[in-house]
Figure 1 (cartoon, rainbow, N blue to C red):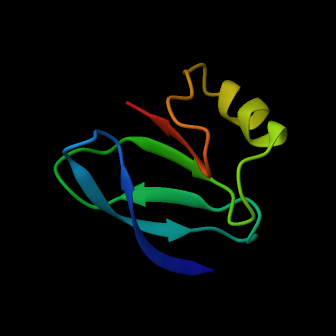
Figure 2: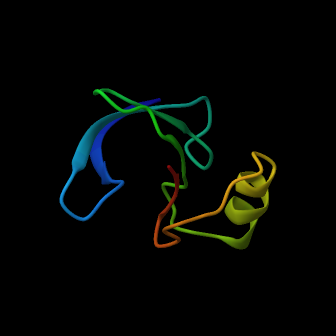
Length: 71
């Protein structure tokens, strides 16, 4: 699965990203740009499970509407 899109890690600094994953419900997004934040996204929308998976990275979810973004 590969989906092109953009995820805003900062209100004024959207970054182009490459959505890559084996399962549509749990792809891993790798950022293409000068910054490389770790992003977890569910194509079906944000779910409580996404936050649990994100917490395994030991970081705080800064945006829960569709994506979990880590600085």
